[in-house]
Length: 256
Image (cartoon, rainbow, N blue to C red):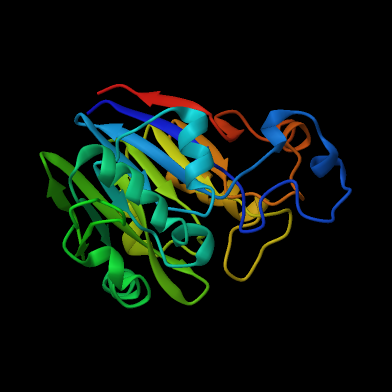
């Protein structure tokens, strides 16, 4: 299956530039060092699959110029991955249709509890998001497209990455269980968490990300979810062949 990817944001929870910081990355004028909160748009099977709804979703949407979201794949309910949920209202308004959203049981319960108004039946003016929450425990098919949730650990917290075709998106990961590695075989493109220079108890650092990439053996690996500690050019110069630094607006394609 052909999959087109747009990296909407590759930043961490604070974004880059970081408020109050005067480091080289935050001072950089290179747009590849300006990072909004982590999210991606995958186009597959004629559908636009949004991964997470961070607080920069409106800005990312206007920058990239897309007006349709057919489904949302949620990784976990931290604020930098969920709290832009209200911006889904615009897509519901344009399409005059609810949007199905998928994630694990905890993720769907969190939306239904904290953002209950988004799960109510749509009103006549489409003035709030209208979402259809669907918990998933394994591979599922939506409108002819198979999606494979990838169980991951974010510290001790079980979360999901996702695979569509030969593309996988793994953010906020500190450990990939052995049972999940089999779900990541034969990838052409791996989008992989790489928070900072040193390891973090809930994220891969540079060395952990490189080790995971070497084990998964995707044809191409792109690093995402980075803090301002990682400057685009300095990190790029250190990476082995087949691994590169992602940036906001980066477009990637995998042929079917």
